[in-house]
Image (tube, rainbow, N blue to C red):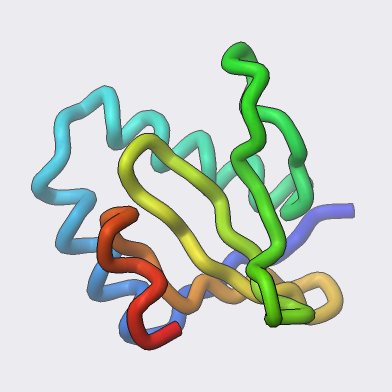
Amino acid sequence: MAFSVRFTKRAQDEFSSIYRSVSPAVRRNLDAALSRLEDDPFPRQNPGAGQDVVRQLQGEEQRWRIRIGNYRMVYRIEGEDVTVVRFAHRSEVYRGV
C-alpha cells in the first residue's frame, strides 16, 4: 500500500526553510525519510542504526513522530494519507503541536 504524504502550510514552511539551510547529507536523509513515509508510515527501526525512529506521541491517538538526526517530523495518518503537521529541530518541534 502506498501512502500519500502532504504537508500543512506551517509544516511546509518549516520544511522548506530547514531544507535550504542544511548540508547535502542531511537533505539526503530528509528525502529518504519522506520516501519511507510513502512506503510505510510505521517503520520501527532506522535502517542500519538499529534505533527507533518512529514513535506514537503520548496522549495523541493519531500523531506520530519520525526522528531524522536533530530534526523531528510530526505527522498524522488518515486512511492512506500522511499529513505532516510540524517539522522542526528537536528542541522546538513539540511546542504548539
